[in-house]
Length: 240
Ligand SMILES: [Zn+2]
Ligand SMILES: [Zn+2]
Image (cartoon, rainbow, N blue to C red; front, side, top):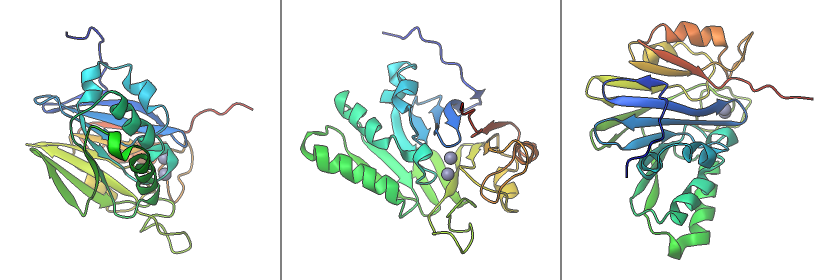
């Protein structure tokens, strides 16, 4: 039965539609990318409140999440992967689920391992963490990753523990969506964003940027290199 819930997409292209389900720095980021022709969905990052976000959509949209991309292991990007896997188990999902991430995202590996150890014999769907080197092809969609400059990331500085942090580009035919993940500014970022049909760019700080996050004005400037852009990952108001 068709759902009467209307989805308000944040961007609609030729092949993809995008909905920013939530994006608040230090709270949660999750972005749904819908392949219009096939109905298959890619979920980029899985922060807190993912289930509340998903159940506001027609069920077909979360039944059809076939691929999850994880930009890095911070809790606001990966913390609810356990809940999502358990939710799919509860719904008796049968379809395979691919979770694509850098090698050595220890938070992701730990959460998925805990789910696996808890429900090994009673999970009706297959799932796997696929470590992306630089490119992964899912059906006719090309997913590429690129390293970014985040706190503790591989190119983030010597004094911090080295953890992987990546951005993604997702392409189908001539259409490309770029997602920066969390990152500070680095020169090569411009080339990743240039000419994208949609760039989803973090713009965490209102004023000065930090080494590991962009400011809103930096994000806007980068956004002008793409055909369209959305600025995400703003700092939420925290009340005393
Ligand atoms: Zn974040
Ligand atoms: Zn982060």
